[in-house]
Image (tube, rainbow over all chains, first blue to last red; front, top):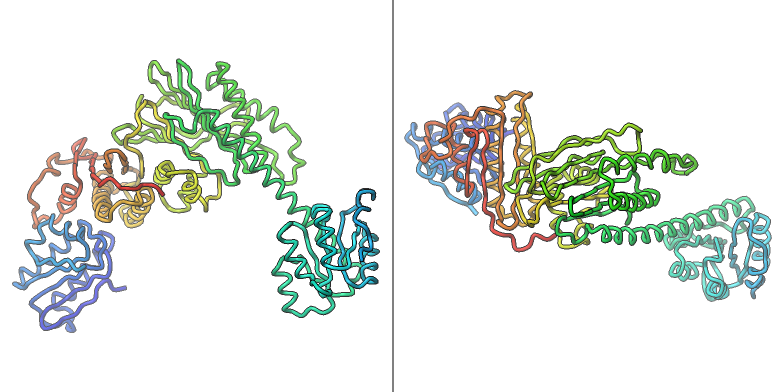
Length: 110
Length: 530
């Protein structure tokens, strides 16, 4: 079962994560994401902005944060931009603790 | 017209099988029914109308009769109206309706209103025999059950009195919750205090019937008397074991219909020497008590030992408590079973029960419980508040894969114990617990299923502080890892430590990080009551 859905609208690729981002599902999530962002899937199309939508995540643990950091580094190498949509102040707090707010635009969607 | 006068009841001999009231407006059928009932061994009283039947039942009392057989269709009032009228006064008295006219709807209506059976007229002898036997038996069974229920309520009153008598309710030394499954049960608690020692006795008598309740009441009295007479715990336990084996279990219980032939008693005695503060536990079958130090560290004490009443040779687990202050939490099997049923930690259930505003709230929480539930919190010193356990959990090094279900268990337990905890606080607690516990499993236990690590969650109600202590058997590593200021984004692996450093209000480490203590200062909930 897929953990991700995506949408590419005028070069803004949005990855929508369905649920928590935790050590127990991170491997599959990482593989699915890589296939979408590294050009392996022709249906994705070109993009210059990556938005990761984790509004459905009630919890993101350290491996989940590491995964977001990995995406930030990937996007930076590609010289693209990145945004993260979160669904709770607590999740936003976690991202801020690991300074992801300095790497990407974080938006709290209430 | 009344064919047989009710006054004849007083002068007639004892009925062989019971007394029935027969109602029909047709004299010949009524007379024939009477003959059949008497032939079948019943005393039969007759009435030719519902009004007449109501008068007889009112005058003689419904308990004079063991069954009522009424015609359905009669002038002025029907058998259904009699049924409705009688249900108000005696729901236990069986009513059988006989009819030659009723359709399916009428029959359904009569059964819905509590008719035991609906018979087609004319009623053959064998059908009447089966119906009357069944009706009389049902009435007697219901009356017997009612009588037992009444007795149980009386025993329950005695129970409450005994608890008060033995100084447990309202004692400043203890908090207690006891909710028996059937108003009265087999669990009991005694507190006894002399100049030299303070003693707590917690016991759980097997079974849930009146027999257990009577044995429990007897043992409470016997134990109290023996303690007042100077018996020490070991001698008291020997005496109770002897009584159970040689007296109680030697009765002819095998004759009992329910097959009960053995009684056993689980029993824990906590004895504190008041001059030295030394505390010794004597356990015969009670779940291992939890000893909690004031600083929020808990230890499960010893093993259960064997219940009393089973063997001549007693297998009592005796051990000394490794401290002289703090609290002991003791519960009976029923609490563990119910906690397992609702998938929370026993400590969380105990905390919530002991925090309930009143007994009704406790009963409401335990309405699905299938056993008596008893929990007692006993203070070793005269202090009222300290850290109290919410979750005490152990895992082995191979359980990293189970972390999601483990976290769910913590979450359910915390929200059960502290229903008013904020979502933000819960998020932080669960996140750092997960991070710390995964570190303990992966690094402290090196993923080895033979090694164990633990997490303890305690709450201090006065300070509104939630304390998490995670310990593993490893050597720890860099003492400074929790005071590192700048996260290194190129080093993905330190994110968990950053979360553990930043989410709690206070963090401390011991044993070079093999034990991590994290405190969350929760805003004091306005209402912790159920």
